[in-house]
Length: 54
Image 1 (cartoon, rainbow, N blue to C red):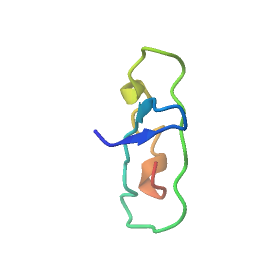
Image 2 (image 1 turned 180 degrees about the vertical axis):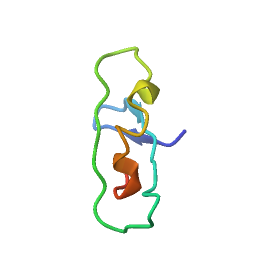
Image 3 (image 1 turned 90 degrees about the vertical axis):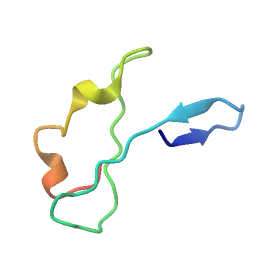
Image 4 (image 1 turned 135 degrees about the vertical axis):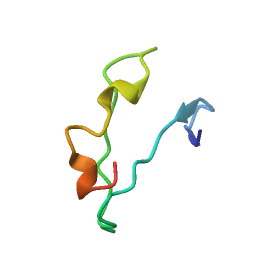
């Protein structure tokens, strides 16, 4: 899984869902609800991935 290293060295993992229609606009950044919870529960955010990269 890709990750970003923050200023203090902490690795923050993230997942990218490409827009299903191939849109190349800026991505929507979605933050999961709490520590220790897998962001997979967000799914495709009710179909937002149809036109947006998440």
